[in-house]
Amino acid sequence: MKKSLFIILSLIIIILSTEGCAPTKLITEERMISADRLIKKLEANRRKIKTFRGTGVLSVSSSVLNAKSNFEVILKKPDSIKVSFYGPFGIDLAHALITPDNFLFYDVINNNLYRGRMRDGIIRQVLKVDFSLDELVDALAGSVNLTDKLRKEPDNYDVDGDSYKLTYLDSDQNIEKIFTVRHDDLAISQNVMRNINGKVLLEGKYSRFRTFDDVPIPQEIYLNDLLNKQSIRVDYRRIEVNQNSISLKFEIPSDVKIVEW
Image 1 (cartoon, rainbow, N blue to C red):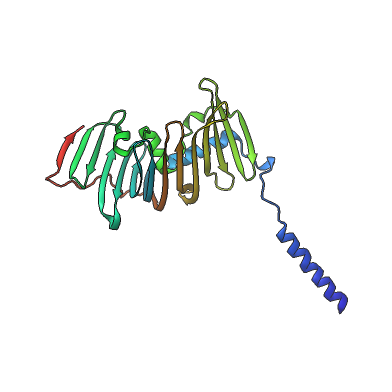
Image 2 (cartoon, rainbow, N blue to C red; image 1 turned 60 degrees about the vertical axis):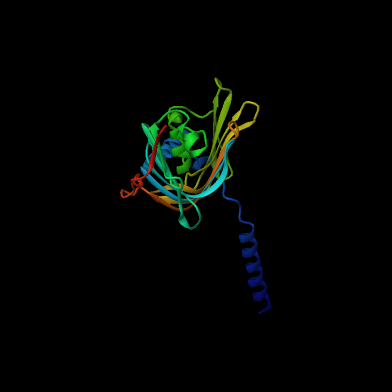
C-alpha cells in the first residue's frame, strides 16, 4: 500500500513539474513560411478590408496640438475617409471628409463649413498631423502597406521567438525597415524605420487584435513619427469591417457659414 501511494505521488510530482516547465513555443525552420509567401499573405489580408468603421479614443501629438478625443472613423478603401470628433456626452465637435479630389471640414461649434480641393497640407490643417491620405488610411485601419515589397526579397529574414522578422535595406536613402509578424495569426505587431546608425525615425506598434474575415485587426495602434515629431494613438472600443451599410455623409444645417479653402 505504501509503495503504491509512493508511486502515485511520484507520478503527480512529475506531471506538475512537466506542466510548470513547458517550453516556450518557438518556430522551427521546418514550420517557417517563405518570405515571399508571407509578404503576399500580409498584403492580401490588407486588401481584404474594403470598408472600416471604428469608434474609440484618438490621441494626437504634434508641434501644433496635443489633444485626446472620442472619435469615429469610417474608411472606404482605397482613399476616402471620414472622421468625426465628439466631446463629453456625445456632443458633436467636428466632422471631416477627405477624398483624393475634395475635402469638407465642418466645425459644429461655430457652424462653419470649410471646403475645397484636396492638396498638400490639407490633412495637416484639418487633423493637425502631417500624413499623406494613403498613410492616414492605413494608420487608422491598423494596417501596413507592403505593396512595394511584393517583388523584393528581404535583406534579412529570421525568427524572433514566436514572430517572424523581415528587414529591408534602402541604400539610396540609408534607411532600413523592419517588420515583426506574429506566427500564429500573421498579425503585424510592429514596424520600424531607422537610419543606418540605428536611430529610429518611425515606429508603429499594434496590439489587442481581433479577427474579421480571417484578418487580424489591432484595436490599439500607436504610430510615432519621430522624424516629424508627431504621433497618433488609437484605442478602438468597437470595429466593423466590410459592412455595405456605412456612409461617408454627414448632416450640414442650412444656415451653415461656408468658407472656401
